[in-house]
Image (cartoon, rainbow, N blue to C red; front, side):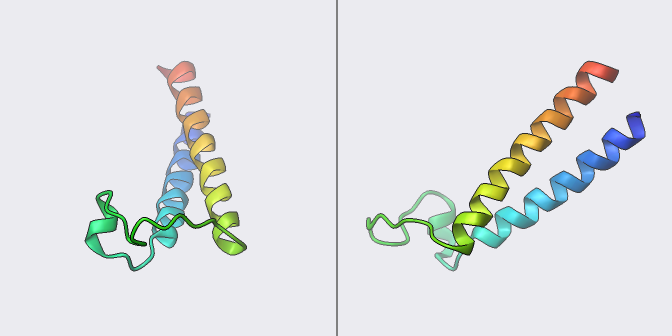
Length: 75
């Protein structure tokens, strides 16, 4: 059981990193550190970008759940 949780944790974390990197668009280094790439214009997520964002949130929750389960079970 412990090995299965570790493997699941590794797989989810790698997928989470990939999903986060797919969301970063060419805004330069300034946007990575909180700068505004769009010049203050708010825009909404649509289509694939919105789906990617929602999947990222689900994967983050899954990673949190797996981590908590591992700590509680084998802490």
